[in-house]
Amino acid sequence: MRDFIKLVKLRLTLLVVFSASISFIIAVKANGGNTWGSLYSTTMWINWLKLVVGGFLVTAAANCFNEVIEVNLDRLMKRTMDRPMPAGRMTTGQGLVLGLGMGVAGTYLLGSLNVLTGLLSVFSIILYAFAYTPLKRKSPVAVFVGAIPGALPALIGYVAGQPHGRIDEIALILFAIQFVWQFPHFWAIAWVLDDDYKLAGFRLLPSGKRDRTSAVITFVITLVLLPVSLLPYLNHNAGIVLAIVSLIMSLIFVYQAFNLLRTLEISSARKLMFGSFYYLPVVQLLFLFDFVGK
Image (cartoon, rainbow, N blue to C red; front, side, top):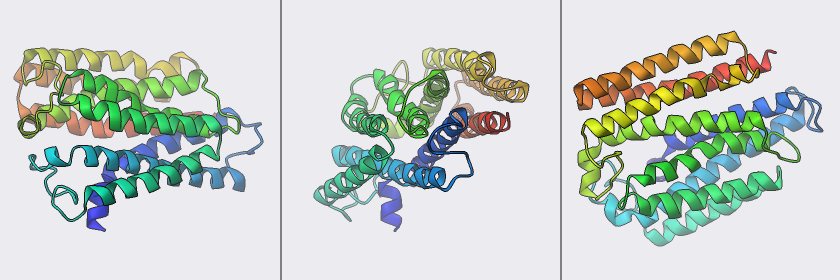
């Protein structure tokens, strides 16, 4: 079980499922007259369970493929050398079969909700495992590429929450918030783990190293996140409570990024990293409660 938890990157996978679940419920509320009924219908919760299980399996599959591809690199880094494949407790063949099995099962479950949900899940696996993964050693552009599958759970959850699946302005807002959030989140982690990442040749910081340029770019993107987080309010999809909380969370995030710019210290990057862990769930939950309560 410990090996399986490490293989699927359980905390990351649960965050993905959490994000998709919130978007799913918002979609059902936004389309309250659809054939799935209200938030209290049995059919709705059965489909929510399909999303949760399917989303977990698809995300776990993408992580499996990532680790199969990077098994030799994972052996070089302290944070990854004890994963089952680099540690020799699982072969890459076993990892590949397990990944394929979870990917097919997860895609089937998500595709049973509607075709677009299934297609988006396949696109997410391909982009994460076969575009983002090899790019990590070549260019900091990898973070931009990785931010797309990183934000797709919000979009997938919303599309899954409708019987015929469609992408509307609420879906795009949910995607935009999670997409922009990815950058300070990724870069804070990359700053903290840069020494370990260098052992495998990963280049994830904007300039490729811990310097003023990387800190400035991180700070600027946190500033961009501030108006993006207010889009639900500005677009009249949420009320003043969400606007106030989003503004406060964004200002805290900006302050943490400014501290990194001021000090260029790993301790400041670590605070920004932990701030990113709190930021997204709080903003998403407030959007959900505000939206559902309307």
